[in-house]
Image (cartoon, rainbow, N blue to C red):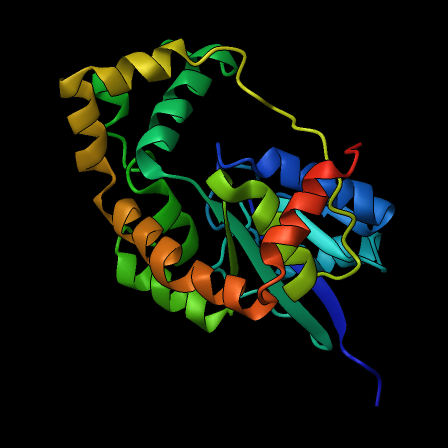
Amino acid sequence: MSAMRSLLVFVHINKTAGTTVRHILRSSYGARHADVEPWHGAWEDPPFSTPDLRRVRKLYPNLASIAGHRVTAYSDLEEPGTDLGYVTFLREPISMCASRFQYQLDYRKKERVFEEWIRNGWVRDAQTQRIGGTANVNDAVAMIDKKDMFVGLTERFDESMVLLKALRAPDLDIRYKRVNVAKSSKVAKDLLSDPATRQMIVEANQADLELYEYVQRELYPTFQRAFGPSLDDAVAEYGRTPHT
């Protein structure tokens, strides 16, 4: 009986250091990594699916990892003989939401009015939606459990990468350079310093705040305990390692 092959499935949530994670995956796996989108279009439903994975596998028979903004946890990818290892990163929701609006202005070059933008369904509770498929935090938590998902924290990025390598991807080369870093955060800071706009962000991310607290207080500590007492030393050593 042949051994199961492994495939890392990276759910890239906007403005969570996901571009740096994708750089790490490409640097580690080379032609065995694929940045993917649904066959029918990048931003049209449904998200990346099993038929899409079959098409990618034909092009990349030795596929080791996939990543994309339209890769989700709730789309049940299936591939016989493959162990799918789901990975994502979460970021503190209030700062992430403000950063997303800044990105819309700076990089997407779109004229946005914040008070209108924040009312869009795809803006609100975005992290919860990408994992569970709804804006209900219970659906996201259930999906994390069902998929045995590794969830790193942007605010603890180096530690998260050390944990990911140790617990889920021992062949990963986690040296990195930061990519897609915002050149300015003035707009985001202004949104967060204004009580009215900050409150709008808080109200738009209630599920994300619950999800982040769950991961931070309950799930992420299980990864730390699984690594063991030498984690701080491993992270310090990682910090001294020259990154590419």
